[in-house]
Image (cartoon, rainbow, N blue to C red):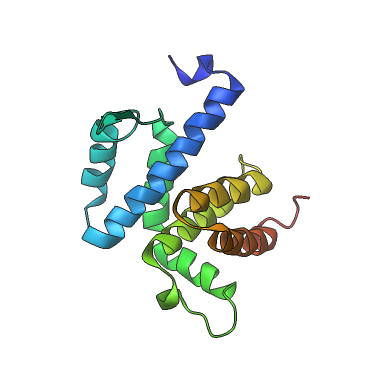
Length: 158
């Protein structure tokens, strides 16, 4: 089924799955230095919509996934500098858990580079990603940081 034939709800679910997979891919890259092309190919072939250990993974919007991963990796220094601006006193990127940093990087990239996605939707989606791995407190941290960051880069959105 082409993306043009998807219902709006199915398109949203595929983008949500792409975000979760992108954060996992970014984590894998940060942990194992997997080259970008190999990383994306591996996710296309074995993760996005595949069956893993008897569980069917959600189908994902592959072009969106590709953009999130490649765009985030291309702009790491810019994203890290931006995220660092919104960390509390006494906090640095080095203090963040590796997975948390990937969630924030993905959200920051999408806020900067994807004006087609409303700011509130980006924040909400990455809070959902955080909930997949963390408790309420950490998800609240993602919400607060990305909300402040989003307001700074998209001050024209209500």
